[in-house]
Amino acid sequence: MNEYKLLFTGTMGAGKTTAIAAVSETPPIVTDVTNNDASHAKARTTVGLDFGQFTLEGGDRIRMFGTPGQSRFDFMWKILAKNALGMIILTDNSRADPLADLRVYLEGFADDLDTMPCVVGIGRLQTHPSPSMDDYIDELARHQRVLPVLDVDVRKKGDVLMLIDILLAQLEAGLLGE
Image (cartoon, rainbow, N blue to C red; front, top):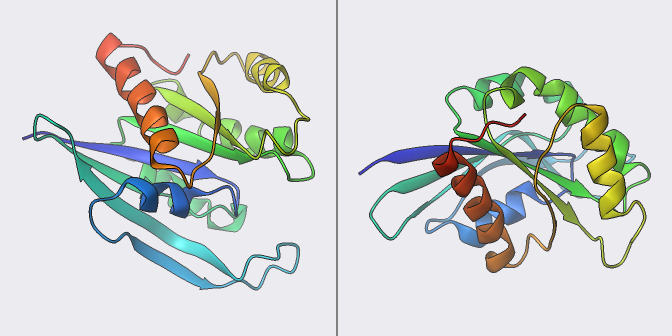
């Protein structure tokens, strides 16, 4: 049995904890505390990590780690990215400037993205159609990145599995996050 580490990252409220919980076979481990950030109406926020896992058909195990979303916890980003085979960046299209949010993670994980595949999942695109999918692709191009970008609802197991499947397909094809 092989074990694969995947990283979920993105802003506070983008759905990292929810995505991991949607597909984990075991109750996810979370390090949520009461949110003291008045700029977010969210009651709780991750300060360490989220963790969940599931088993693929052949017996291989996927271990999923979620980063804290707030930049003040960015020291955890590098720790959690170590030995990850791929990354899923989640964005929330209902936020004030989701493209700026994406930039934070493209820049914060720039070195990692040179060597690991990545997928971008956009939440709430249906209810907040601006910026558009093309705007995200243009933002990635400004950072010299060509990455799959998908409209997802992280509450839906099928959507989260689609993100993971695309990431694993990149790994199988030997593609890097370039």
